[in-house]
Image 1: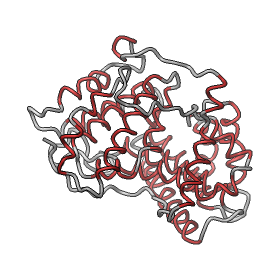
Image 2 (image 1 turned 45 degrees about the horizontal axis):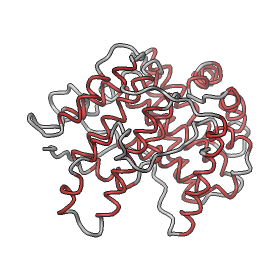
Image 3 (image 1 turned 60 degrees about the vertical axis):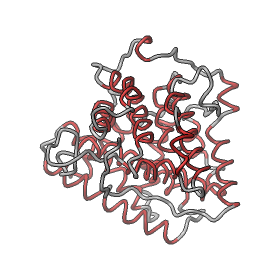
Image 4 (image 1 turned 90 degrees about the horizontal axis):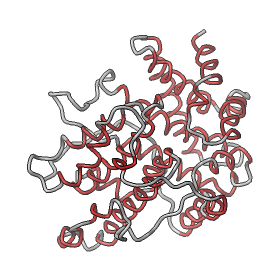
Length: 366
């Protein structure tokens, strides 16, 4: 009975909360995805991912329902296990679509699960017995989607389902000069050259690029009319940037705080509710009093502590821009994936990240 309840909730409610920005994409998640998952072709990982997200959604409404707690954990574990095994066996024309959709739902799982960190026993802001741990599982999950897509692109780029889902995302056009006069977050790169004087020469270029690209994505999402554009950040930042967050580099953490502040516009979305306040204040707790980075944290703190998801323009700091149709075509997410897929196949293919628990020993940023 619980499985039927979860399936009913997914098709009627949860599928409409995935920030599709497109009626066609909403229909894909509501109808086509469940049909594929329960078609009897061995795509159990997709079915379990659907049920896990639905259980998390219901759990957000009834946090004391132990059956939902158990279901969210069980379906998530089952989905991850079968998903990982299928990836290990190889992406094929038969499973490429289902693996892409499962990877996307796992990214939602990773995001939604974060709202239960206290209930599930992980460290969280405000817990006096342990320090805040940044949610690296977000990056693992969202980057996993990108890598699955790139590795399976030869098969799924003809898929109507995949194309609708991907192109429902905002067109991706970056100003690759993050230090330009109109760069809102350009101050995040102040002092970078001096900081990197002692950097390992083998990592100097990738570290510089990691910070610059991350700031470019922040600038683009900050001005984008579509609030969901901010979710491009965990999917597109480089592995080197994720490593810098893992290493507790102050600059990487300050940039991350700005990303989470961008999510404030989506405080009314159940799987992002209060995420801006929780994560920004958690990141701030890692900085020592008197840190030179406090002035760079003023904007994300101010945004995070606002009530509601409606933010005055003078506080947000810029006027939101909606792309013209021709700009959306030029910078479509499909085109960027094609470029990434080509680059991936020109080099050794990296392992596909799978979201898991974050096991990190924190160091204090100065």
